[in-house]
Length: 329
Length: 169
Image 1: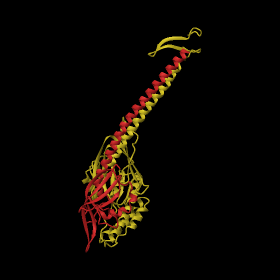
Image 2: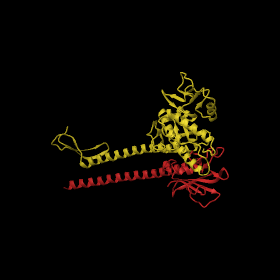
Image 3: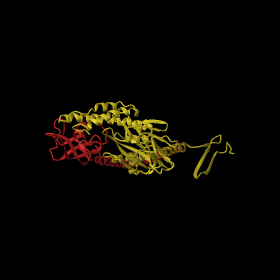
Image 4: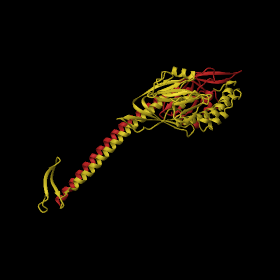
């Protein structure tokens, strides 16, 4: 206990600081000089700002790293552009376990494909990096695909002319078992030799894709007569093998969006072929192929259920082109 | 008075010290950011270059350019110039579509005078500009340029050309 009247000044060493005078007020509290108070407050602010900036910088670095990887993936998709009637598969290995985020937007002339990457750092997935945008790529996958190794399988989509190369993205951690697949699909998958696609001797934990049969174990059911794929309780429609793979590997939302984007590109290509026909007409080629119906039906597509209408127009255009004096494609 | 003045000097000293520490931290932070962003710019340029290189080797096979089966059998690195001329009517839709700054197709054999193609002079011309880029780095790939030609009958004619992709405008 300190006496009020006896000087309330003491000298001592506290916490390693030599304090010459520690003032106590009348109630016995320590009186800190303004200089110390100022130093403590400003010091705390500086420390807080330094820590805040460091944390922000680390997060930005993680985001930048994800963005770089996303852009690299987008660039690596270029070699997947195929020739005609050929399929390609590529193994993509990322430096760390990552999530590839597939975003699809169907607005605008061609819609947008965005690829973003979230990398696993110190046991947790970092914030998703800035996505890499492309207008001429069509990736069919779930919205988020996780793993370190990814398979990219590409196949041209012809309707009736080549519209685009579709890319099917799967993680090596997920395997697909194609049960009772038609012979051409079996042959195609066998020749691809993609490590996570099986037609026989399937791993027990594989996702079972059943063709024209609805077994209890089936995760995905493909009806080749009605041209539908049932998955996760929802149904989508397809035309041709390329879109069938798309419906198998992609979530419904992504699939429908990509189909809309493909139809937008088909619409533009049909108009280009129509203009080409006019150019060739000037050089003596007769006008034999009606492409405006195809362009119109593709433009009017609302969802995959309308594919059957576009298919009818595409078949007509294909027949006309095959019999034309000057083939357009 | 003396104590007050001494205290004020101390506060001033401390304030100067704190300002110096803050400035040091800010400068150090900016230095790190400058280094980081310069390397980031380098990475972006490298990716852009790789994109252009890969695109140059594959663009000819994309649907807007490729010959398809229009000239007999399907062939790779073959550009249908009739289709590309038709594409030039609709370029407003294709702005930013390929993610590069410039795309140009040039006939290199038989050599010409470098005349730009238009609907009026096609096919008696040597150069089709799809995306115009006045500056930047160009990468190119050799391609066949095929078209339908009118003689006593309609026939296919293919010539040697280059597709030039420009980036970094």
